[in-house]
Image (cartoon, rainbow, N blue to C red):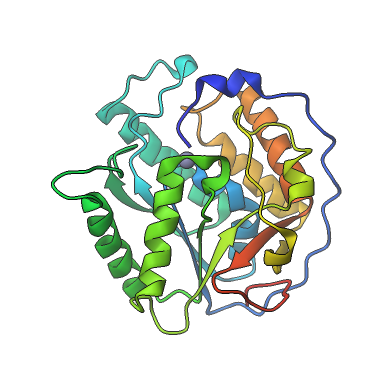
Length: 268
Ligand SMILES: [Zn+2]
């Protein structure tokens, strides 16, 4: 997520809940693809990515935009090509820490997905073409993305989730692939410290039917991956951000399956 001036407003931290013992997935030949808007958005599901990578799944992170507008004062990197280059390397660093494959960086302009000309949705059509081609190449069993609320509401988050959903809705996703949105129940969003200074919107618990528990080693990989995104936050700010995320996760990352799905404790 782009750096926000409100970052300093991250509030008092709650104690992180104990990490649960996760069931072993039957992976090995499965592929998990997480599609998000910005370099560092993968943080929202990072323990689940680390968990599946550690258990043998092929895990990919697809990043729609180049993050060139995510300026943070502490980093002294101006918006533009130089910041986009730094953020691409940070995305690669994060993927390594999570045990994922090298990230797929689509390079769309940060905060540039919503336009009215040459026609409404023009960049989104190009993005849909690129994501469809990527999915055809990777043959995922499971695709993860932002839900309708976009976490804390960022328009790039909402639009990327929308485009991925449109691909599934149109029948253009690979056969057998299942789509999930990350989301958090109201009791956690109501009590969580603000994340990057922002409120995370809730998803009704009844829709969050898949819960991916993770282990301490996955939690630690997730924290190291967050630490890769040094252009976005100071170490102290990262600690605050991660504490907010641990409150939201509460030892497991919840997901809503597109068009509903059975209660499950693993993707595969
Ligand atoms: Zn973002």
